[in-house]
Amino acid sequence: MQSHSPQRILITGAAVRIGRAIALRFARGGAAVAVHFNRSQAEAHALLAELEALAPGAGHRAVRADLLNPQDRARLIPGLAEAGFIPDCLVNNASTYRRCSLRSLTPEQVRDDFEVNFTAPFELMRDFARVCCRGSIVNLLDQRVAAVDPGAGAYGLAKKALRDATEAAALEWAPEIRVNAVAPGFVLPPPGVAPEKMEKFIPGIPMKRAAAPEDVADACWFLAGAAGITGQILFVDGGLHLTANPVAEKPGAAPGSVSL
Image (tube, rainbow, N blue to C red; front, side, top):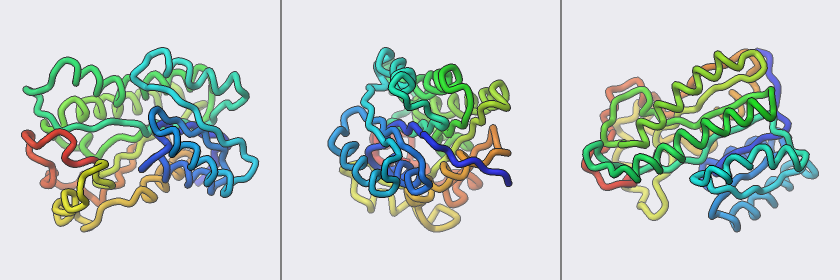
């Protein structure tokens, strides 16, 4: 399969967790990485030092933006372009996740969950198409897009909307821009949550293991460079999406009890 390794990549939420693994993977491939962060400034600058060691002189940089702020996110890609960093790949990784039943959702929770998990990545996709004109986009979804999980609340609805936007943009923007997605399953527990909280769900996964952040990063790297692939969702969930989702928490579980 023909491939084209990206040269300059913008990764949202890149300073920590899965985003950090994605940044390291692309730097190992020789790409210049723009590390987007909001509150994790110290972690972002520590990551920059690691990226420079992997790809010296590539032009890595850190860029702050609050994705809940429309002005911040509207400046993100144009600001990079004005500074001479025009991405040829965008990875929409940043997201928030909370467990909440549909009945219990407040209007503010719905708004905030959609802003971060759908509106922000969708607007960045459109800015990428307008400013960068060609390249590839990889959106981070969730294995729940293949199932029904009411307890995932507005997060689950927003990720399904982003799935639909991935497919629509892939069709509208071809052949200049390819748009794909990675749908992880269980990867890391949320900060402050003991690993055992997640481990009890592992037996319900066909592969009997959680995905590693590096597994998700490898999938992003593959889709970013696979010139013949667009409009696809690559599940990195050990086969969980093929089941009836037996490991989903009950709708009444506490918000944030498990992070995917």
